[in-house]
Amino acid sequence: MDNGRAAWLKEKMGLFRDKCRENGLKITPQRLGVYEQLLLTEEHPSAEVVYRKVRRKFPNISLDTVNRTLLTLADIGAAFIVEGSGDPKRFDARTESHRHCRCIKCKKIRDFEHEDLNGIKLPQDMDGDFQILRTVVYVEGICGNCQKK
Amino acid sequence: MDNGRAAWLKEKMGLFRDKCRENGLKITPQRLGVYEQLLLTEEHPSAEVVYRKVRRKFPNISLDTVNRTLLTLADIGAAFIVEGSGDPKRFDARTESHRHCRCIKCKKIRDFEHEDLNGIKLPQDMDGDFQILRTVVYVEGICGNCQKK
DNA sequence: CTCTGTGCAAACACTTTGCAGCTAA
DNA sequence: TTAGCTGCAAAGTGTTTGCACAGAG
Image (cartoon, rainbow over all chains, first blue to last red; front, top):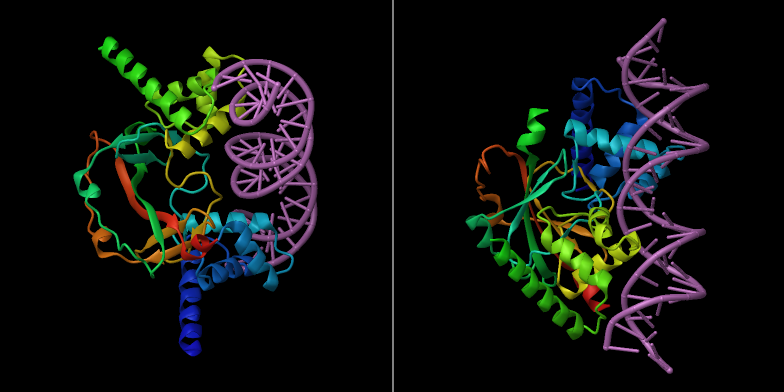
């Protein structure tokens, strides 16, 4: 099992190097380290968490580098920013069921209704004991206004 | 139309007063002002934006009050915090399609797969020109661990 | 009168930016 | 060699907390 995982890791790292080259990015030890830690963790870590892990291997790495590297990874598609996180809190007084669509450029949020989304059923017991409070469905994209620019 | 809207607003504000009483909250001008602004706007404003609006009517209100009031509104169910916003960015190196479920207490995010969610179709043209980049579906709730506490 | 809510200020957490030196290609 | 990357420091933004006073009940 461990062997399989080691091989998987090696392959992933190789693909990552390729991806860096394709995008004209230099292959630095820090970059490799950050990516490796992100691959090896099951959590969906914040920059801070990655930082703490990477520092075991690169004691001199800075939090900024981790931060910038993670954003770079997201840029070239080697990682994702977990949906919706990061911006200031937004509030909504509409209590009826409705959906949001958010422009990633100007951050505007518009409401919309869509039938298919309302009927979604989820596993009521995920691994036995996760109490579901709400199911979030929304759409991210670029609004007409921002496309023109 | 304006009359209809005025009546609607009056009714909403009345219900809000009731809700405050039910929850043992005092009815203060600031609280009413914040809620009213949130009702009247179509955007999904941040605390800052609400603050600027409310200040036209209550020049002495502070940003903190707006902030706290909005959180209180969310607490008693008079408003919602728009999904996923507010926390630090989180990253994920898994590039295959999968879903997240997030515990609102400990902020842990776990992956899960669910068939129904993958087939979702969205209106390809919302109001004509919104370019959809991705459809986000996730589940919020309380994980087994946090329920025990 | 009492106790919650408000306003102010300070602390805090996370992110972003500028710059000088370093290093992969 | 040189363009891009790193590390450090500082500033910016949004949120939280502590406390004294004011105002709702």
